[in-house]
Length: 84
Length: 84
Image (cartoon, rainbow over all chains, first blue to last red; front, top):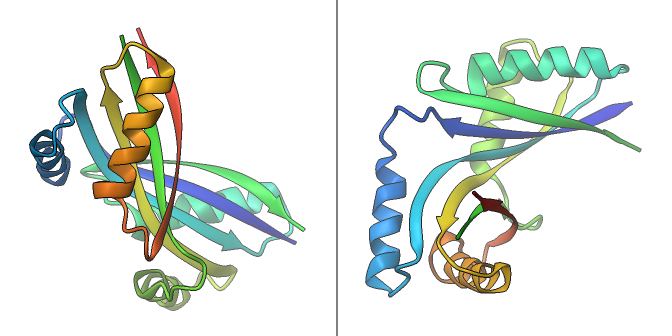
């Protein structure tokens, strides 16, 4: 059995999002003055072949902490859904 | 009134995800053999100050097409939720 994890990694609110600011300024220059803020993060879809949801959740938490996010600057959250 | 758009930008399925492959190999080397695939995209939170949901949706579609995604290689989807 497998689970698909849909993971969002976002910069912590206290961290300046330089990429987001650049996108916001570009949008202002294009005339989109109603855009008040942009924060840019990562979105990942990971297929995890484990028998139980609990085991897939454990693996997903570990890989997010160890590789897919930087816990000093970023937060992560995910949803798991069964595949097949 | 304002709306928060939660936007996911993903590589089209036919496009090779080099960054995802690299992450998958790194996880294999760390011993996570149950990870079968990883696709890496972007996640953005954009605050749009418009009076109506329809108008916010129009702006969000436009900025995704023009700046926040590359329509040749990427797909996007978003959810809107009212702020205050």
